[in-house]
Image (cartoon, rainbow, N blue to C red; front, side):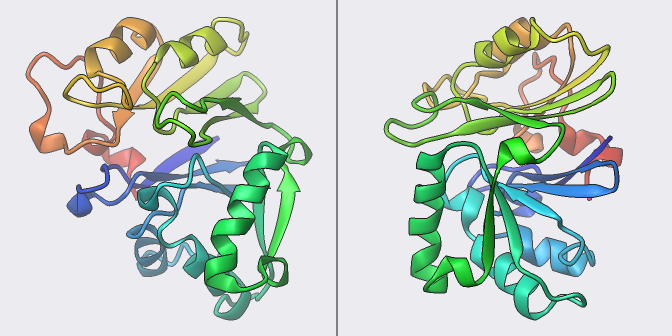
Length: 230
């Protein structure tokens, strides 16, 4: 499996793009999140057409700001025009997505196929609702192929969620991509806590401005790993 980040920054880190990644598993591409900077970057890189599935960690603007634009691109501008496919983890979150997209698309069912995540082989989720923002449904996602596992945290204030999930896994090659925050804040994971909870895995941090990284940070940043950035 491969993962490449479309953007690695937080809500105001526009130079580095809103955090978003493409996971490729057995020739299928999965886009995680689609904030305001994501569609323009995908389009410029010629990557807007090949997206097979879209997943959303939560509905904050920096994670869904160009979602409807990508959906319209898939339907109207792609070389092989088709309906977009959104994988959803729970029925409640499908309802949230439908409500959001109704404002942008009218009737989302004209443009989108909503598919339960269970129907996508090798993809799963960990619910993190309430651990980023109160009353905001949120999810981490993971991808498995044989002995490989990729874990993408989304925004979450407790890296222990990932640690507790991963301790039961038996895959030999586990790569963790976890959001970081430089200050202590209940809605995000402090960099030192991420290292303490997940430092024994192959872990990378994202959702931060890499120019502000504290000197004592021991979590490698996606932004400092060119092979991981689109």
